[in-house]
Length: 125
Image (cartoon, rainbow, N blue to C red; front, side, top):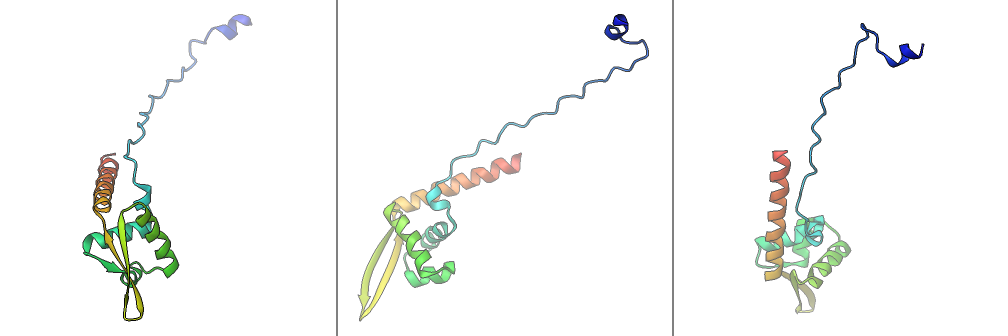
């Protein structure tokens, strides 16, 4: 009986190993600028890249966001020196105007290059 356990029967079918599936290598994608990648902040720098300057109200209208939300995101971009903010009065009405800085323009260009790389790599896969 021990012999029967150690030897295969002549007629027993031997299961063939399935060919190993090719394991795809993980995608190597560039790191994105997390500061710009957030939707509202990307909208701010994109709108300012297409315009010499925009007022707070212009940006709020373009991005369809609230005063508070725009304020918080604009402040983060200002702290990173991606945008500049000019506050002044027109008569008795306070006005705020934003411009994209040279550093902000470079950061946006780099971000767009990174996104183009993401698109190229994912389409290739």
